[in-house]
Length: 517
Image (tube, rainbow, N blue to C red; front, side, top):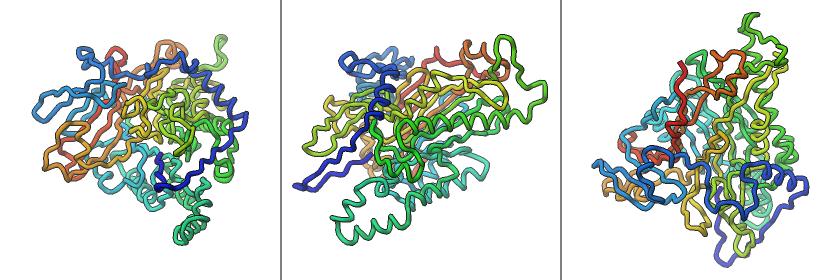
């Protein structure tokens, strides 16, 4: 999310979209059902959940708050003041994009792009990161059709050949409908110069939003679901990527209703949450119906006296959205916390949860009722949500009254790891790396670094409670678990040179399940 600064002396009018009572009640109900749905005065001033990396053995002996240890080429560790007081993040220099131990699936997240995507990113993904899955969180540009076409070409070329990556998914952000969905288009067309007005008329006549949807139709997951078929083993966990609300502006308000009516036939936050849940149910039903076609008559589930609808197995769901869900914190530095004002002179002060209520309601509904009925088989399947990836709320805080500097980018809550990949700008000169690694030599001054958020998953076992409900315990016990999350900065001109990595999350060894044999 980017906010433009008005010219000096210019008058700024703030337009506040009215919130109907139904939407307000819906947001309150979702917030009250979340684990952090307690009165504001009773909540801790700093986030208490999701600091998984502080339990790592690397820092059990270094319990120094707000201090990071930076590894330099000489091998020594320099103690520095960290820019992340909520997390003892490790910053190190690596000679390559090494994977965490026992990693079976690597996800590379390309956060809010904002016009920063080139062939160098393609080279770095192929040669250094080597992911199994690539996720785009949107905001490619202000309706930048040319850049979206480049990403569509990349996806078509990579998914049609064997190799890395094997799966690509995309979500559209608010900037991808910057003029079409917003009243800015009409206001600027009236007051701006003739050249800018003709540009807006061209946008309207070409339907840039429709063009973007058509270009990425094969990888877009907005209000849609796509299942992975990596094809390595028959016992691989079933994993489906489900998209949240596309073009989301974030927050509890239902913004731009005409836009969502025209493009998605969705009229409210409740309908949006229902649309997401329907995508999950329909895709799981389709996957298991296809899977059942290869079963023998003996493999089909049979009802018993104790269970009329036997549970066949575990189906994991990974959520990809532009903005995160409501209920993950209401401070400016929270993973979806509001860190901006509406404009100069506005009483819209920073702080408050800016997550999406519809996404939160869809996730909470699956957690409250994890057994999804399969009408075609007369059985059920247990849904597990290991990961939710999004962007929109940029890492560097705009209004920072508490002096945190950077946003909390990873939270673990109720068995789900929430990852914010919005590092903006995602391409920075070497001088900007001083913030991460200390001094940068004069030789590296002209080098530019590209950022990717890397998520490593390992294969483990489901809990004993879930396994006891399964019909085939020996066959459907394998699940993916998030083992590590890091931000990786890779030099574009020398991809195999030293890369900077900031580890944001690492599962404690006591929580890691053994790999399924």
